[in-house]
Amino acid sequence: MQTLVGTKKGQIYHLEINRPKQLNAMSVQLFQDFKAAVDIINKTDDIRVVVLTGRGKQFCVGLDLKEAPEMFQFPDELDQARKSIRIYDLIKDWQYAMTSLIRIRVPVIVGVQGYCLGGGIDLITSADIRYCTEDAKFSIKEIDIGMAADIGTLQRLGLQNSNTSLFRELAYTGRMFNAQEALTLGLVSKVVKNEQLNDEIFKLAELIASKSPIGCYTIKSILTREQNLDSQLDVMARTNMAMLFTNDMPIALAASLTKGKAEFPKL
Image (cartoon, rainbow, N blue to C red; front, side, top):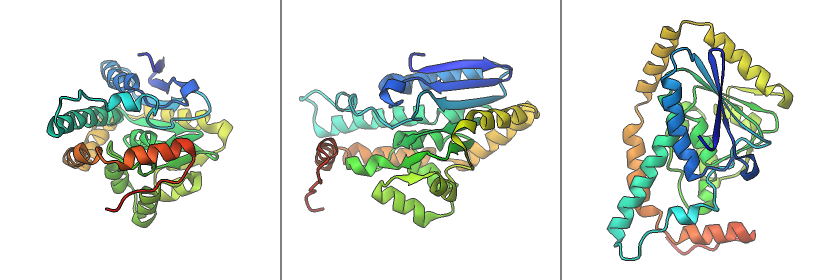
């Protein structure tokens, strides 16, 4: 794995996003590495808990926008329908990567520090338990590049919280929200001092690792089945296979890069 580092510490497997110079932005390679990590973990019988963190000051700033233009380039000879099918396949591949934490058969604990934006939220909502530091900052950022989040945030976070008003506000505005709002939303279950994050999540991991592995496996399998998100994610992929061809995206990206104000055409 090129963008992830895995370290086995007894019955706990520590998985770290390892692109600190890029603020742990999500690349094509990172998506592939998450899928590979699932295979490694699920084939190791004595792993009872997985802990996921990000190296450096930021947990994850979302999709690597430097790579993004290449991801959406298709041969000119393709018609709109064929381009749409390729977009659908791309979204489904990313969805599969971002549900990696659900497919891990043991509980997954995430520790978030610094920024967790866009795809970072897609990723952590597929974990079992989430803690963050007091200075953590979050954003459902996709609206700021002219699109709806399509890799799981709208589906999973929609089920995981009861404050639908706050959730919709954050999804529609893309505004940054802090650790306390993340706690109110239900995105995280605990806010800890910055220097205590690793101690807290590994203490929790050790407690869970001391429990019956069969019991934990059963709990996770039932909770995952109860969510039953496959059909919802597919609807999202089929929607965005058309919607991602909007001119709003280049307008929004240009405004973001120049720090200007986006002017969108009428609906």
